[in-house]
Length: 123
Image (cartoon, rainbow, N blue to C red):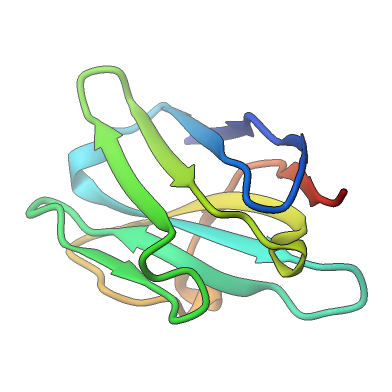
């Protein structure tokens, strides 16, 4: 099982970015995929997840209404569309996977992690 997150970068407040998580070595519709982020000096926190097989989605209150998670099972990719970005969204964003119809942002249940991609929101 391998995950690779990419798409980060520098963006101004109010801007948008789309992160991608490319998965290989497993069938995506057997796994929940979550996005997490870690700001400098802070704990890693859950941002959003998409559950399998039904595609149920969850968002942390801090990103609700601004971020959208989606997936393309055939391509093995999960996306995180981020709009109206704020400086407090700055951090390293990770995608992670856990097998089964799991519905949680408890990061210690996620078995597989990508390497992270840096998002910086600054003017």
